[in-house]
Image 1: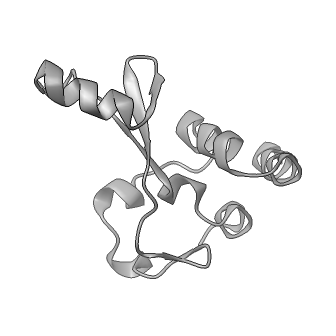
Image 2: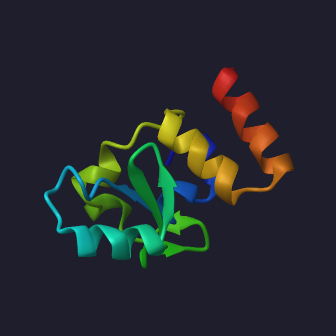
Image 3: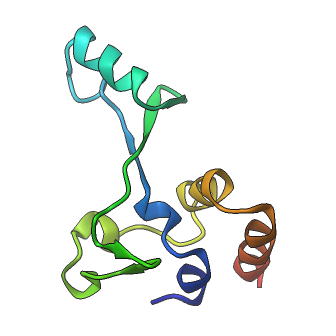
Length: 100
């Protein structure tokens, strides 16, 4: 596990960003999703913690989905999850670590 991830304790594992319009969902399905998440640039951020996140650690790390394996630490999505879900103090520590 990356040092940044061990300090963050899985903010990226607590949300997912979906693009219902890109996926061809009906207007009613899109409306439902928009009511259950936060709108961000035409996408919707859903707050739905992964059941494999146990005390800030992935309990299925060796067998995690490709989507998780491909997630880029320090990416825009990573930083946004940290901004939304971690304290200001933790944010400062993590962003400092990313800049080193």
